[in-house]
Length: 196
Image (tube, rainbow, N blue to C red; front, side, top):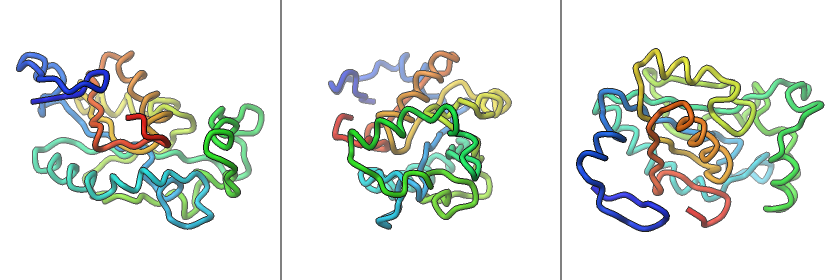
């Protein structure tokens, strides 16, 4: 098996493969693969056009993972209507993102509960798990993701999804700090820039 370390492809020794991938205790986590990022509608509140590139490859990967018996966990941001989750302490990305990618006219609608922007853009099966209380950059904060992973006996996670440069990377750090072994497939993640 080969993997990328600091953007250099290297052969992964068998013993290291077992540390990071073992189907007995590995889960696949998708992060923010919803219409609020992936819709082609010009009103999309936080567009991630590069994220659309991985929808079909991710659907295929999840089908393969399901066939191996790996649990699939979808994590999605959901904010309360009326702005209570952003009122006094808005997420830093809301201030920085317009500077880095340009103004976003409908940014206030991002992740608002009950809106069309919270619909998943990838295939979700009945046996998949949903974590829908993400309010900031990490899939762990403030959600019950860790509780779910521990109760499923998960020790290794494969992180996929869009917004690699903010949500996936923050989730990877939080997972590693909680002693999960983390794999981030470069062909199943996309950031806002070509930095993978």
